[in-house]
Image (cartoon, rainbow, N blue to C red):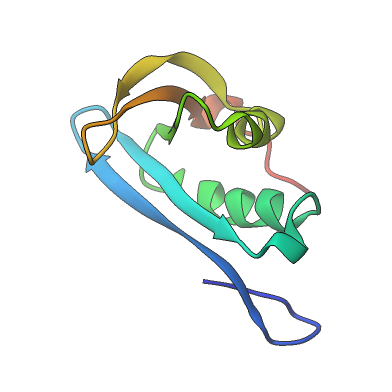
Length: 109
């Protein structure tokens, strides 16, 4: 859950999914933000917190994005994810796969 510190209001959420110990990989996804918080720092902050946590346990993080969801594709590219192909999401829909490796992640200062 993501909170706006100034108001205490819930403004979004995201979660981990699909942990694969053999690949040392986890997915971050199902991120939703209130429209009032689009385009700011909230998505980047949320993802950076989750990436920092994930990289304590895995070597790579995957994001699966719908092929028509250009806004989300750009958002994951902005945080450093690289398009690596496609694969089905948890519901069996073909999605574009993006990945960030721990060795390539730059912890924000």
